[in-house]
Image (cartoon, rainbow over the protein chains, first blue to last red):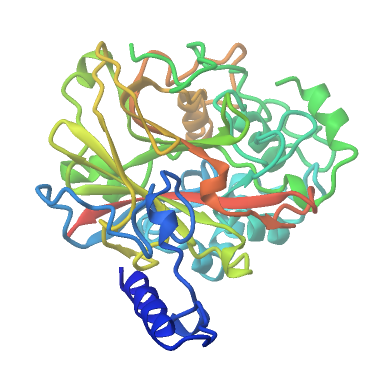
Length: 211
Length: 236
């Protein structure tokens, strides 16, 4: 509203002094286009359709209490990091360490645990030694592609998301126990459960109905 | 997944790419979140992120409170004191620094689930406050038989019990770790078959998430990548 009134004032002043060129700008050149606040589209710096940012607040309903401070208790990015590589006494700390700080604290304990799980570990099918493998593991976020296919692994795409169907278990077992050519520990490189018991939907909400 | 197919595909892939798969057993998590009392209501069992039926959208899923038998499901509820946050690191800060640039905040009030965002967080890290200034949506929480979804601002929302999509012979895995079994059984038995979880499912236009970080995934050096993780946060 403020900018609109300033424009009115400028126009009025300009009109009152004939033949004067008036600049149509304000706020030090940072013009707020309030037309976006009423165009029915979430654009500009809005955080909702025609609200938030430079427009009116989106929160027009004040009868629900959303106040308070919330402290982190659990955290998850990629499947299984904490359960497999954590040790007792450490898992709670892992769940309350932000991703950007996980590596510095947990890479070495993860490496120790990898060698405890597989004492003969040297490298895996991806050619990674224990330090390199666990360094990437301790970067615990899920990578999701903005374009193209999303999958944990489908034989071609690698680490572009995680679908409901992805068999994250088998791939994980192969990399932990399979050795450099996936010939080691043959009883440990697949759990022989290849799919979910229920069928997923191709439409929202995609997950199957509850039993 | 067939082992031979995996090996054939692996041959042409770069080293770093395949390094991060891990056994998916956050279902059985750390003492503070599974130790009974109020801890279990903050336990995240799985996170999924995949392209939607409409390829311009992504689906984000966070499941909590796993291993619910059908009877237990009817009395299980989301906790009003637990804020679930979807964190997204995108290219917005020109840096793949694993600090959240956007969040979607999800919390139960009464019989509905409320969703705020995607929005820049008011603060990053271990402490969160709900950004009430962000765009807000809601959906009535479903039961096993009453399925509710809602749509707002191009997004879709669901919150309620779902069949647990996770599958793993976790029983056998624990027996192997405990030394009572030498390896996996064939066929395997899915420990999670017949069980439910409480699910939060959000479909969101990619346009609302900004641009991904090009090169975050070394196997796809030209693909823009979002880094996504989910946290559960208890009211103090």
